[in-house]
Image 1 (tube, rainbow, N blue to C red):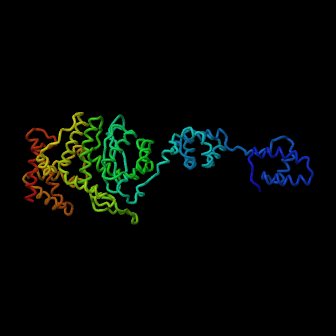
Image 2: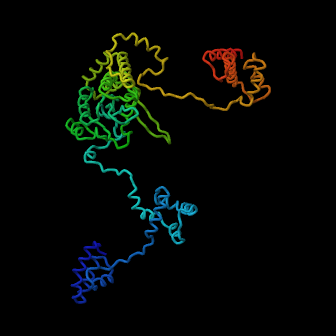
Length: 517
């Protein structure tokens, strides 16, 4: 069987061969027939019938399959599809035996017996085929666009592809300081993290543009203690643009990108977004040049404090043991210490790092961070646009406050304490629910009785029911009752509440009872 031709080519061949076949001798006809059948793929009998046909260019008319499902059936199926909230064909096929009787019972659908049998016997593939047009008009799913030439030119790199690089390969990301509203103009933080040393740089950006990102990277190249060898970016337009690609090509920087919607591909910088940026700045909304100036001062102090005085763990290996993931970490080191230990760091750079480390005062840096945080919070909450005051030359007050700062809890001004509503419900069953009226009767008859005495009396009347661990609960309950009675005696009303003064008195009485017990 030869290769089959297309319909138009087959018709042209029939027109060309038919005349020669009609005027040829029988022996020639057999040769023509054999070649014609081999080329077109027709059976020999069909080829004879086609070549002997003098009706024109038309070839054998294909037999039309009788139509089983008409437009009325399709309309009924669309109604059922809408009634099912537009489920797919397979789910609708499973639902029809339940949906059709339910609609018939409530008078929403009337079907003739043949149509009902046909409807319940239709296949899922036929349902999808009949609903293709309706579903195409209603389907609003996002169509994934093909990657552009620019995106295809930047290779993809995942978190597992780093393989312990030398210092200079960095991940880069943006943090939005938009507060609770991702609208309008607000400040971004550009974060760069070195994979080998975890050295982190943060820079505030007033606008999110590719040109500003390139300019910022160009300025940071002179401030970093290593040469930028590679940048790993996400798929945002501020990074994936011609300006950054051209800049990296011109300066010999390897440019890679993460996979779309896979934040774990940039695990190193994402971790620093939380442990450095959010820990220092918080989640308030920051707008305007004044906030950017304060943020720049904060990052100037924090880059030295974080990179020289903040040890961090670095993941060494990760593997699975059954259903458990085991992670091994290197001993915690500062980014500066990792650079000093790296063989690829030049000796001159190591000398400059050591010299800078000897001149840095961690308390001065921490005080600078706290001052900038106070100014940042005041600007974000109260709109006070004043820049931070000059740093205090005397650290005595700040140093003295460090020994007692833990009493006030969280010291970062940018931190927001979670507001929790007071609990007004019980978390466990009341152990004295059934016996409390009896206890009150005993207590009113003898107010001098203590909680220990009442508990022993309960244990005597109800053996094995009340444990000694309920003593404190009973004493606290009696203390509340005493406070209510005292309030009723003083104010003439019973609010069921304890005033602050009476509460402290009650607590002292309860403590006395506990000591006696």
